[in-house]
Image 1: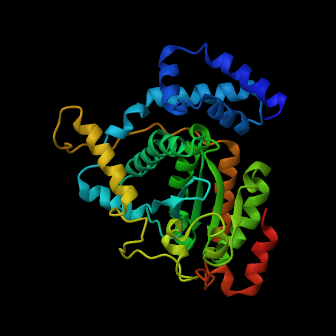
Image 2: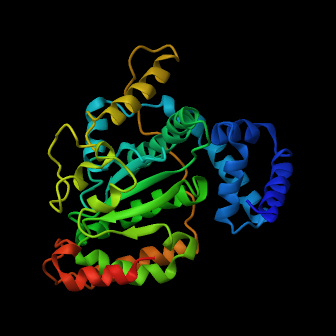
Length: 341
């Protein structure tokens, strides 16, 4: 870091030393001993403006205290059948680590339906994965590699993306707003794979609305992206939907399907939450409602992006062939290649 960055972090740290005790306590959960790296995340999210970064972090910590986020990893989604339904309709998993040690999160954007539970369960599940990543996975891999690792990469599978995504925009906006305001700069790079033409059209109109810092993180790969991804990770860490050429992802249970509730990552997460619940003195999770979290108001940029995507999807309502992968049509492939950051 340059001298200006160091000075900003120092000034920011002095401000954080003055916050009230409940906020300090939850901040310890956030930084997990990597204080400077986490102050840097909030500074980057506010273009190194110390005052704005301080306001953002304090609001994040208040959100955590008000919504008891520190205890969310002891709040299982029960019964287990409901948790399975959530996993089957909110497709996300961790397939392994990059060669540099960053966790690889796979997200089935196109095939996630979010139609088997209430919005609060999907939000609860998303936050639990974030918290498990930040409080368990990243500290562990940092210790293993002997250096701070505080970010991950995400591989976004667009297989099956279609107009029904219109019904999911509100929920996706809630989740992305929670990430923007409370988990900023946690994703090092986004890799988009198996993208149909409809994604090309949406990306072309959304990209100009994004900050340059964000667009530089997004890499749209041809087909399944297998060859490009193997440059940064071993085959064993490759998400299942990238392993079969351009055939895309599947809902069918298989040993390599990192979306499956039976995949090691989800079993470890489920057992971790269950164990921490049981340490409270109850042998089995009681039937309970979802863990309600206050939804922060999306920033103006996020609202505009959602409206733009919705408008673009409406344009395709009478079109056919929306699920064709980009790589299947030369013209579409070139469109995305030209749009790469």
